[in-house]
Image 1 (tube, rainbow, N blue to C red):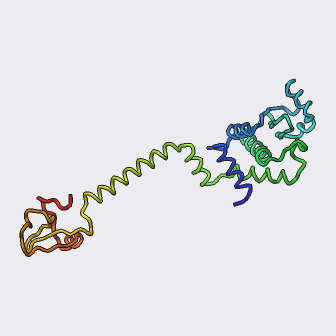
Image 2 (cartoon, rainbow, N blue to C red):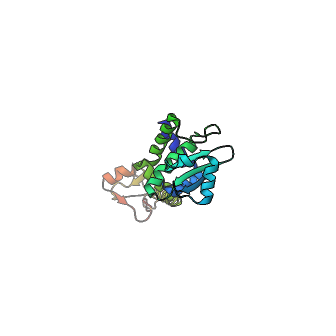
Image 3 (cartoon, one colour):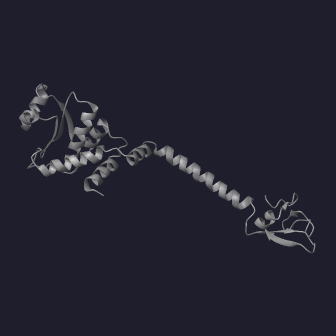
Length: 223
């Protein structure tokens, strides 16, 4: 399996994601220890402006819709406001790639300057957002896991009951039943109609049915 495809799969599994959307991506990134901050490139609130100025990312932010910052004390994912759901998913999946693949460290507080890192984050984002029948089935199962487990238990119980009923109450193919010389019924060995009689023959159930015999109404060999 492709490395980035595997990493995206691990990301989904680790953070128990049942659907890729802005909220699940935000939650996963926050669980990685990063705080998401919404900003406007040119019209930030005083506290956001002060934070970006302190981190020396004001100039960098003017040309970006999203970026990740990390140093020894801070872990932030900055995300521009006024974006569509689709844009947020694309941007956050890319930033999640930087976070999950551990591209940032104290010497490299901002991504974007390493071509390899950007390529890896793009690949991670691609596989994270990629839709497939298997992914749809996987998410559907995780969403309705308890229902599926209940249904599987019920199905297993029904199957076991059917097998038990079949083995206990149905004639076994390897069992022998008995007929008299001129009779039209087949009987259990203990049946009063064949007890102490001579000239009785035994056959397997399949043979008896092929010959046209029907079950005795007294000993009920089919029950």
